[in-house]
Structure formats: C-alpha cells, structure tokens
Length: 298
Image (cartoon, rainbow, N blue to C red; front, top):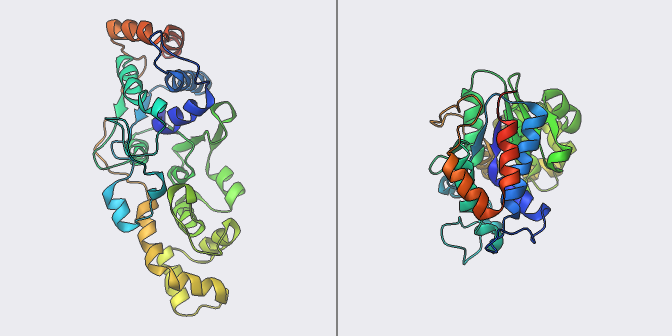
C-alpha cells in the first residue's frame, strides 16, 4: 500500500478540529488525522508493505513549462520557511516537517524524488512492485494506474468512505478504461489542477471521443481533417486547442520509471527513543501506538 501523503494530511487538517494541539500549543490536527487515517486503511486492507509518497516538488518546472496554468492558482506568498509554495494555511505549514519527522521515526518509508510530485512516486512504486499494489489517494488522475495488479483506494469522499477502484468500476463510472483515462482527463479538464480541458467537452463528450479515437493524436488529426464524427463546434475547439491537448497529455501522465526503492515488508522498524520523545512532545501517544500495533504481526 502506497499513500498520497499530502492529500491525506491536507484533508486531515480540515477534517480534524484545529483545537487539537500539543502540550506546547503546536497544532497537531493534521498529524493526528493522518495517523488515524493510515491506521484505518491498514486495518481494512492488511497490506504487507507500506510507504508514504512525498512531494519533493509539488509543481515541477517541466510541467509548468508545458502548461503554465498547471496548479498556478495554488501559489501564494509568503509561506512558512521550509514549506513548499503551495497555498498552505500557516497552521498546516508548521505541521508538515513534523509529519515527516513522525513518519520517519515510526520507520515508515517516506519516498520523494527531486523535480517530481508524489503522483510520480506513486506511479513508479506501483509499476515497479512485483505483486498487487493499492494506491491511496483522492486524486482522480491516478485512476490511470489501475490495471490487473493495481487498484486505487479513492478517498475523495473521506477515508471512511473509501472506494476500491478497478477497471470495471472506472468504466461504469466514467465510460472509459484505465488506459484511456489520461486522454479523458485532458479533454474534460481539471480546474483543481489548473487544466482547462476543451471548452464544451464534459465527461460524457470526453468519454465518447476517447471511444471514437484511439489516441489524442488521432483525435486532433481527425479534427484538423474535418472529421464528421466530431460535431462542428467541438471540432473547432479541438483545432484551437490542439497544442494544449498534446502538451497536457504529458502533464497529466504519471511518470512510471523513477528510481524508487520498494519498501520492506511490515512490521515497521521504529526508532523507539525518537517515537517516545515525539509522542510526548506532541501529545500523540495514543494514535502513534495504535498505528504501530496494526502494523505489527498478528
């Protein structure tokens, strides 16, 4: 099981009361929520390995060079020292380095790669792991990773309401299979990532176009040639957006070949002294001990 760490702690920050604080007054609601989320997921799915993907670069330059609007709306200055440029509330910003410190003390592999997002780490781990992989995220773009060996545990409606996404579920929901989800996403767009898509193309239109044409390149070529399989209005918009479509395909596609280390089998190997000190300092002995307990052999 590999975790989209920033998605989980960001959601936890807004889902757990801000009144939850360490003895010294430091906010710990995101840390607490993340630990409880991991515990719940491990209890439900009983993975034999566990890793936390980390955003070493949440908005890589190579992606913004392709599509400048990519995540542009999330940028905010000033920001807490040592925290990425993403729009992050101050009380979450102070918790981010503590989250990493706690995870590492617990022996949880925290894996990031320079110039890449956690999505790319998740994709590379899933692709390179020999065996079944569960990718925990609320990011629908990672549906592209689904195959016979990989399912996405989608937590977009909360960890308690998680859904295990496989190819059948995906096709029933959106009318596309995983190998065409990138094309579908590019056409539909994703405002949360600053990707506008094609004006006038919604989910149903995007699914239909991916069914009619084997690739985005083929779709653009057909639009340029005046294909009657595409309505005139949509054909015009595809022609107008042709360059964007081809660039966005690379932006949306998850990198699968990063140099990543497959995490060792459970149980975790915590640093006892660090764990004890952090549990006392943050007032989180209960959540920490529960997570260690579910990651221990039965």
